[in-house]
Amino acid sequence: MTMSSSCDLLITNVHVATMAVSGVPYGAIYNADIAIAEGKIVDVGPMVQSLWQGAHTLNGAGCWVTPGLIDCHTHLVYGGDRAREFEMRLNGASYESIARQGGGILSTVQATRAASETELLTSATGRVQRLMAEGVTTVEIKSGYGLDRDTELKMLRVAKQLEAQLGLHVESTFLGAHALPAEFAGRPDDYIAFVCGDVLPEVAAAQWASSVDIFCEHIGFSTRHAARLFAAALQYGLAVKAHVEQLSDLKGAVTAAKYGALSVDHIEYLQAEDIAAIKSAGSVAVLLPSAFYYLNETQKPPVQALREQGVDLAVATDHNPGSSPLLSLLTALNMACVLFGLSPEEALLGATRNAAKALGLARKGQIAPGFDADLCLWPMEHPSELSYAINQHRPVAVLIGGELVGQ
Ligand code: DI6
Ligand code: FE
Image 1 (cartoon, rainbow, N blue to C red):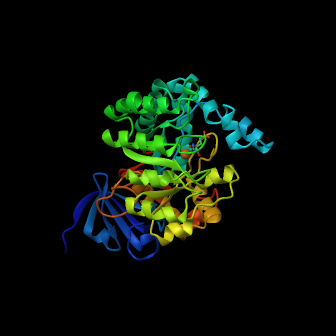
Image 2 (image 1 turned 45 degrees about the horizontal axis):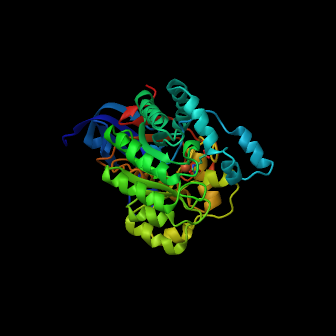
Image 3 (image 1 turned 30 degrees about the vertical axis):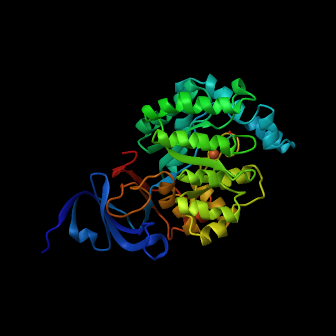
C-alpha cells in the first residue's frame, strides 16, 4: 500500500478545464480529482484520489471545474445611473456629444461625489454579488468617478471593503485620469499634474491601488498626459494599464507598451502595425465587447492580427453606468465570440489565465499545483457551453482560497 499525503479538501469525480498550457483544448483533464491544502491547489489529475487523504471531500458528480472567473476591467463603484442618457442616445445624441455637454462620465462624477461611502458600498455590493453568482472570484475595480482627492480615495476604500465583506479578491486601479473635472476645465495639464503630484503618492503610499489607468482619447487625455502619468506610476511602484483606441487611434497602446503596461484595454481602433509593440511589452489585450455593443460601434478590434502575433487576449465586462451596464461576465464571453470572433476556448482563457496576467496575478487563473484554489464547479457537458448559452449557467459550487463560498 502506498502512503498517502494529507490535504484539506479533495474534490473528486470531475473533469478539469485547467486552462494551463498543455497542448489540449482548455488544458482539459478528464475524470480527475483536485487536492487542496492551505488555500492552494497541491495536485490535480486522474489518480489524485488514491494519493491524497482529504480532511474533507467534495464529490463533484461529473461536473466540470474551471478556475474561478476573473473580471479584469470594471468601474463598479459609482453613484446614480445613466438610464436617461441611454434614452438620449437612442433619440440621436452620441456618446461623445453627451460627454462634451458635461453629461456622461461627469454626471456620474457628480452622483459619486454626492454619495456617502455607505451608499456606494451598498450599491457596489449588489453588483459584485451578481458577478459572483456567475462564478467571479476576482474582480478589478477602477476609481475614476471622483476626480478629486477625497472621492477617488473614497472609491478605493469601498473597493477594499468589498473584498473584506464579500471574500472575493479585489484588485484596485487608480483611474484619476478618467475625465477632466469641471474645476480644471481647459487645464488638462494642471489636472494631470494634480493627479500625479497630489493623489498618486497617497494612493501608492497607502497601497490603495496596484495600478494606474487613463482614458486616452480625444474626449479624455492625450498620449503626452499618459506618458507623464505612467512615468510617475512606475516611480511609485504601481503598474500601468490604459483605456486606448476605443473611439479613435491616438497611439495610446504604443505609449502604454513603452511603459510596460500590464494591459491595453478596448483597442477597437488599434492598427496592425502597432501590435508588435504590445507583444514585446507582454501587455494583455483586454477586449470589452459589451461597451462596443452598448455604444453600437462598428470598428472591431484586430483580433486575427493579435492572435497571429501571439498577444494574449482577455475579456471583461467593463461594467460602468455609461457604456456598459452589464453585470454578467459570461455574457461578455458570449459577446466576445459572437461580435469579435473569439473561440469559446479563447473567451474562457480571457476570463481566467489571461485575465490573471492582465492583473499581474501569477497565482490565479489556472488549475495547477501552486495556484490559488479559486474554483467553480459547473454542471455541464463541455466548457464551450459557458460562452454559448446566455443566462443559463450558474456554478453549483465556488471556492475561493480553498473555502466554499456561502458556507
Ligand atoms: N471607457 C469606458 O468604456 C468607460 N470609461 C472609459 O474610459 C465609460 C465610463 C462612463 O461612460 O461612465
Ligand atoms: Fe473601462
